[in-house]
Image (cartoon, rainbow, N blue to C red; front, side):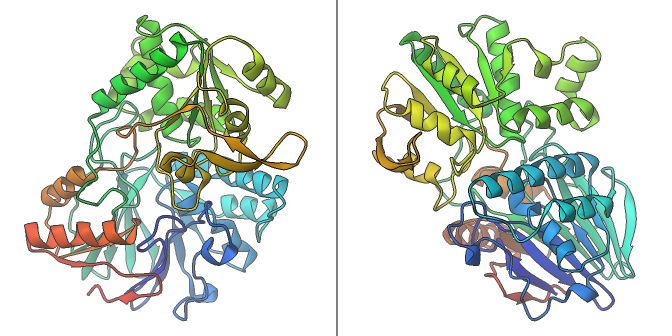
Length: 457
């Protein structure tokens, strides 16, 4: 049985409990960073089926906080067992969790665990390579496969009982090669049930090709720099940031956009170092560049690291055009909000969204076209900031598959599953994707809500 404990018919706080005759395993344990109250921020660990004493293992699909941000709480709560993930996931998770604690502390919104519990979780982490088979509980054998979403992201294949049932949980995945990673794995030894994400599962979720997205991005940057403005791109520290760094480096190196400083702010710098340290997880193309051509785009001189508040102010006040990549990616705290306040009232500047903006986040409001945003100014007083800068959303850089790729993925899954369960998507998208899969491929589908329990065998 699988109990949904978060991230079903919603995006954020992904978590589910797998119960077999002899085991209890938690798949992901995330937080919803855009939630305004704690009630919707954390997974339902109070579900009647869940008992921390009986938990055998935790599996983390990838390092984004909506999938791993609540793991330290399990250790605060008395869990003492293993956490399984890939090596890059362990490294990136550590980085993001410490940063999360730090931001929560700065904003006076403390989390229900401390850095001690983050360290405890790291001590209990067992890293697996793609394709490595491991027994994680009396009757579950786990293998991780590439998911193509961010560095180290994994699709979990669970061989249950003596092969009585095989469950595949995709986590977030991308079924298309990107500059950074190879596309998600579609071949498994067996797979009766597949639990898959549906972030862009709605009929209208058509994303432009990567190539068109890049061109659109460069046109927007070119226009902004020409009028002497600055470009602000709020990004997630892991994934989107490195994807854009590779693109910007290439376009500038070939003289296709004017050479201006590219400022990197927030956790991006440290996250990028982890990409450089784990090239075996990157796309073949990037590996070739790094190993055979001796050229690592991540360490180019074009990128300037931003160290502190004064330097930020300097960048904003200088008359020079510039490109700024900063976290957080949804303008929910972090340094991107500082830049936004300073840049939004000048129409020469441009804000480019390249990632998902979840309901309730400030990014979603700006994206929807709100012209007045109440924020604290530098003196700590709240005032209305008028959004005069150009605001542009460029799809196609996403680490998620679009509707067509999601359908194509199910079609090409080998072997063909008997049942597909959708999660990680707004209610309408989760349902729309499930009904299309059922109609097109005659596969049984389910779209549970949080706290539902689904029998898979």
